[in-house]
Length: 139
Picture (cartoon, rainbow, N blue to C red):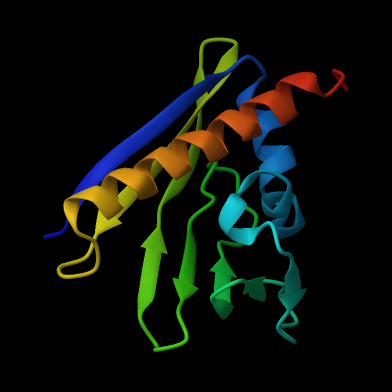
């Protein structure tokens, strides 16, 4: 089993509103720094396969299909073929929502400092998501 950290943030918008914003792959480029360089469809007719362009080169990203359960899981395949599973959920929390990302530490992939930096980057990304969604006008 991998070491893991659950990183979450409360957002003062309904879970439906948060999910409506985040479930489109293009929205990830607005708040997820690792995908900020942009996404290109990978020819997948279902729209689940994408290529993310970054400073370390292109990676393939597969997003969960739209669903009624707040699941935003995605899989990142690095150039060397390593696949990273990124569980991401939007769950109702009273009148608001909680967004939870599980960060896994595959054996040999991160030292302690790198894992801490990655967790801090996820926290920054979630804070940016919160700011974006809370700034949106109610529908």
